[in-house]
Length: 273
Image (cartoon, rainbow, N blue to C red; front, side):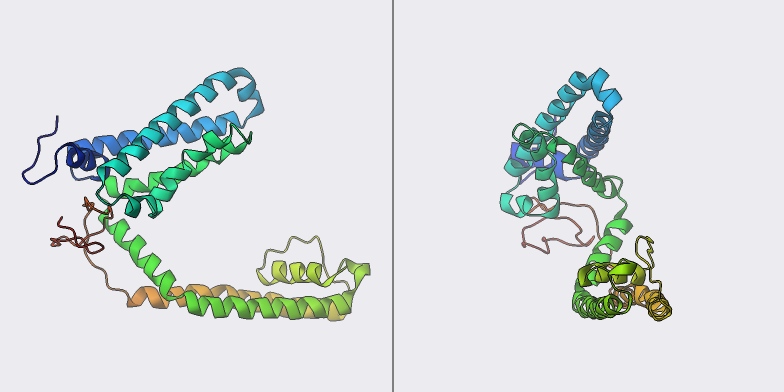
């Protein structure tokens, strides 16, 4: 039984400490058990997709799937109850993932086969960085997210430029090669241009004329340079970010973590930590 700390609000604070926190023994034990349950549930879904295994153990796997779903549903409800601002958790990344981790089983009652979407539960294992106090990973993940957000306009312009190139090259190849060489339409020629520019090269369509092969060679060479552009954009933004020391303490009001070590109040909602 957890001892009630001065100034807390009783059982809700105790439940919050166990479910959301990773700094206490109870919280760490709960989260490790949760991660093991997630891995086992995903393994059960994967085994159920194998026809031979499903034929022999289909009933058992179906029961296991529902047991885990009920447990995760109870956990999801407890997370909502134990937090002072439930909507901040419900619409957060982890809140949405937690909800998606239980919905497919219920949807499978109406739409058979949707239970295989339960593999999305593996996203919940991301909590391992918080549980094992890999604070540096939390910081790096936050910095990467910020770098991607800061780069979004440049990347949008870059993608629009790439789209323009593949449309023009697709139209040219449609005129140069024609239906006889597999370029039966401009959309299909654009598909070829995308495959070529990204250096994937499926080989299902290929130019046969000298002019077409020359244009394809130019597009392939461009592909090597284009691939490096988004990496450079994100790297520049990443280098501009400051590396702040954070801990794993979760706000009892909004449930968000990643606060500075010397923080007294939540940086997101202002509630006292």
